[in-house]
Length: 140
Image (tube, rainbow, N blue to C red; front, side, top):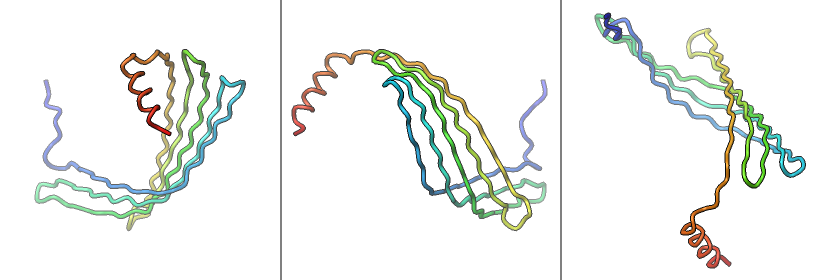
C-alpha cells in the first residue's frame, strides 16, 4: 500500500478570514393557510484576507492578499404546513466574486444547495408544558 500523505515540500496551505455586510430581504407568500412560497435575496460587500504558505525545499514562501469581495445569495422554498406535520423543499444559490490583489485573476464561485424536509409535531412532555404555563402566568 502506498503512502498517500502530502509531502513536506512543494505543497501549499491557505488561511482565509472573511468579513462582509449587506442587506437581506425575504418574503413568504401563504395560500389557503397551509401552503407557502418563500423567496429571499441577499447581497454583501466585504473583505477577504488570504495567507498562502508555499513549502519549498529551501524555505517557506508566505504571501498575504487583501481582497475586496462581492457576495450574493438567493433562497427559494415551498412547503405544506398543518397541525400534525410539515414538509417542503428549499434551494439556495450563492456566489462570490473578487479580483486577487496584485494580479489579473478574478475568482468566481457559485454554489447550489437543495434541502428537502419532512417533520412531525408531537405534544410536549407534561413537565415542559407546566414550566411554560408557569412562565406565561408571570408575563403581563
